[in-house]
Amino acid sequence: MQRSIILAACLILIVYALSASGKPVGASPYVKWKNGPSHDAGFFPIAVWLQNPNKARMYREAGFNTYVGLWKGPTEKQLAELKKAGMKVICHQNEVGLKHIDDPTIIGWMHGDEPDNAQPLAKGKGYGPPIPPKSIIDDYRNIRSADPTRPVLLNLGQGVAWDGWHGRGVRTNHPEDYPEYVKGCDIASFDIYPVAHPKPQVSGKLWYVATGVERLLTWTKGDKIVWNCIECTRIKSPTGKATPQQVRCEVWMSIIHGSMGLIYFVHEWEPRFNESALLSDPQMLSAVTAINRQIIRLAPVLNSPTVEDAVSVSSENEDVPVAVMTRRHEAATYLFAVGMRNGWTNATFTVHGLAGERNVEVLGEPSPSEVLGENRTILSKNGVFKDTFKPWDVHIYRIRRLRSGAIPSGAGG
Image (cartoon, rainbow, N blue to C red; front, side, top):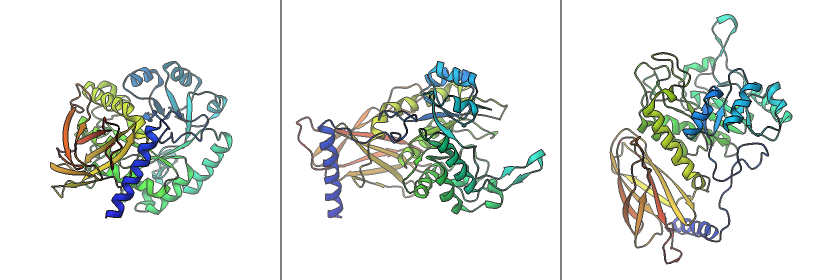
């Protein structure tokens, strides 16, 4: 234990020294692609799934920076509308797309959605097997051959997180397919929507979102960028709809467990079809806008390297574990923490190597959404502080560098 604490403290001091010297700590994960997403370390992808480009300005105002998918596109009109709105897009590599190979509006290419699910047969004759991983890998090579300057995104279905998903047909409960699927992409994503989910095995269990992110990271062996989808409407559920608090929890569960990009699913079929239901829901739109703006504000922190083993956390309520991620940026240490179950608990955090009394800021952002109103301070003593987590709570903590300029003995900064 003592050796691990010393190693963690040494690592944090190294990161501190780099920050203090003005050298960049961490880098954009997209630097390998000349025409891919922004190389700015302050960029974090916040995307919306399959929306009409004529709504791009409204999504920009809500903190979105990327479209994923274009209906029967890309077309010349769609790309022109997105460019006018200043919105980037990841789309299929069709003839029009290749004609715009030098257009910075396009920042990535994509496969068809959810190839791991059972595929519909012609003339409504039911469903056949999923698309084989080999076909995805072959398509990936073809896309890359036509344009190696942009990443290729593969969005998979809920089988990533839930082995019991019957929508995979003959490949239900075959998770061994996924390490093969992810060989056919540069960005691996997936979707599962626990609040709107119709099955009791998943319904209301938000942690399936984090489980899917973790599994993708394992299957990609850290060689691919991982994104995931987020629910914010009823989708097809007559009753189940995430609250702003649950959406925020899913977002930060995703990021804390390793997701580096978000794709909001904003369609709704109940009580009627609405392609852009988020824009028709003032309360949810306000909440999502506030969440997105907080992510944008913290993007340089999120793109900084994780400081492993610098912080430990224990929960008084064993039924409500608390997950934590640690980042360091500009001489401050950030802790991102989330309650992983629908219950209350008190959590004790230990920042290893932090001596004396220090103020721990609990970050928030004034917002009518009621989900970001924190802006308080907790006192830590020798690196230990406590906080309360309500159901699906998220807290973001910052510990600043000592004003004297002295380098602290550990993770304080």
